[in-house]
Image 1 (cartoon, one colour):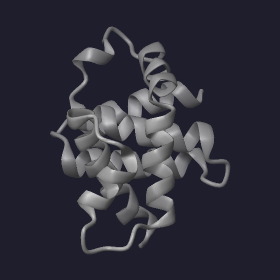
Image 2 (cartoon, one colour; image 1 turned 90 degrees about the horizontal axis):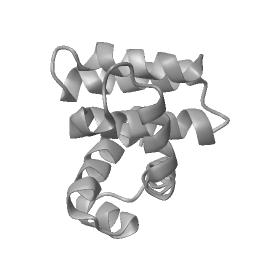
Image 3 (tube, one colour; image 1 turned 180 degrees about the vertical axis):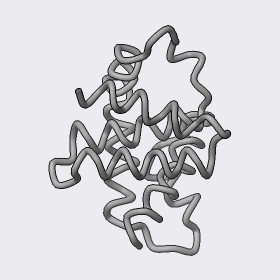
Image 4 (cartoon, one colour; image 1 turned 180 degrees about the horizontal axis):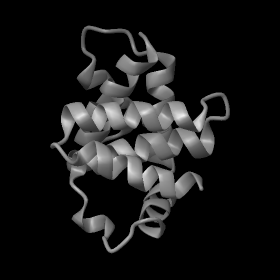
Length: 126
């Protein structure tokens, strides 16, 4: 599985985790009934789940005139994935994580999601 596809799958799984509070590994197995679990996908899902509180604090600390509770679940999940990559995965350049997050936001969010995600992530890497 390519990394972009793994990020899309991670978005879907983490979004479900946010709603259902399942175990990350079980959520991956349930979501990917017919596919083999990709190592990068597993790293993203388990990493975001393990560091969710720290990641959410990072998001909250870098919002301008906004609270984390007001962020739509899709955008919040995309931000969590990107911040996990930026903070915990040394082999992925921050620019790649940001670009991937903006692409996901443009596909799965509304017309302003990409700009919002880009702005939050740009505040974090400064």
